[in-house]
Amino acid sequence: GWWMVWFHQDWSLGSTAVNYIKHTWYFYNGSNWNTWLADSHHGKDSGFTYGQLDSTILVDIDNVSTKKIKVALHMSDQSVSTRGSTDGDKTWFRFVRLGDT
Image 1 (cartoon, rainbow, N blue to C red):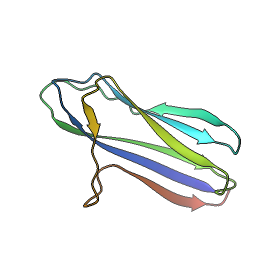
Image 2: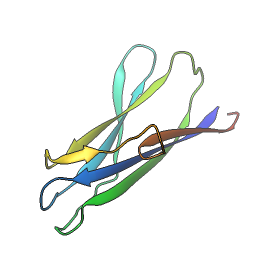
Image 3: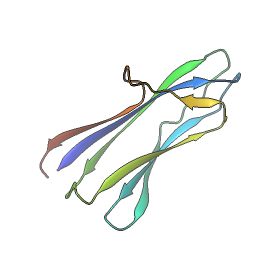
Image 4: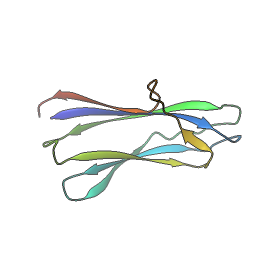
């Protein structure tokens, strides 16, 4: 079936500026991990401490038992921290089934 998968990253910055934050999506087809999509490039000037970055994909998954999705985060500055908390939604995935294929 068709799925919308949404990844939201809430981040904070420990230094003066960051050049980019990028999400790379990977898809597991049952035997191998494949790079699927590199998305959500973000350039940032100094003066900001917090930010959010979203990326969304549509995918046709024939068997949810054997297929997997993961996202790798690539940041130009080691002082960027992904924020999270048990008290609220800061960094998250959302999976929405849209219908059959």
